[in-house]
Amino acid sequence: MTTLKGLFSSPCKFIAGAASIDQIPRNFIKEIAFAGRSNVGKSSLINAVVGQKNCAHVSKLPGRTRQINFFTLMDKISLVDLPGYGYASVSKKTRKLWDDLILNYLIGRPNLRRIFLLIDSRRGIKKIDEEIMDVLDNSAVTYQIVLTKIDKIKDKDVPTLKTQIESQITTRTAAYPSVISTSSEKFLGIQDVQSEIMSL
Image (cartoon, rainbow, N blue to C red; front, side, top):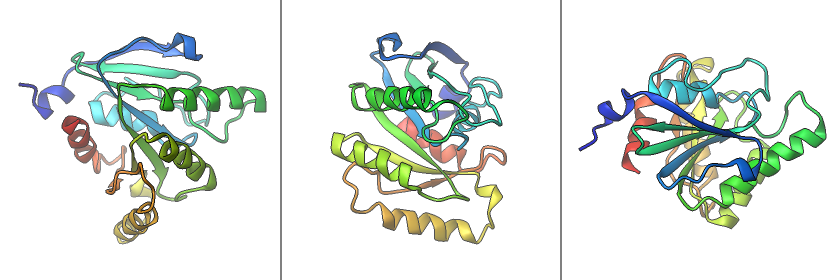
């Protein structure tokens, strides 16, 4: 029987990177995808969850994850690092290709069990996040909000923000009702993310 500690202490293996839909690997194990705006902290969160500093490449510049990256833990579950949507220091044409790639993956992957939709706690939910949520709601793809970088705001503001967002998503049909608050730098809330993954 796989335990939480056993799963997340196992090596995180890179499977493949896909820059177009036809490059996405056939994969029949359960997948968890990490989505969010550019520079929201997807790669950092994946690294914190698997306990490895360099499993997913981290860059301080927005838009540096330019393909969908697939990783696996014990060949039991796949973690998927998606390119950041929205702002990136690239041309509009390239950005549209990325956004189309993300959306096509999200609504066309039968083994995708949940999307962790990352929201920067300093910025809150923006219009482009709502647009992604609309697509997921309409496609019946389950997603869960994960607040990132909570160490960058006041401790007393975290519960208020969490409650506010949980109230904000109550009418969204595909949104998981509870919000997870995290800081990859301070390792806050990481075990909560691990537990959600383990439950799937």
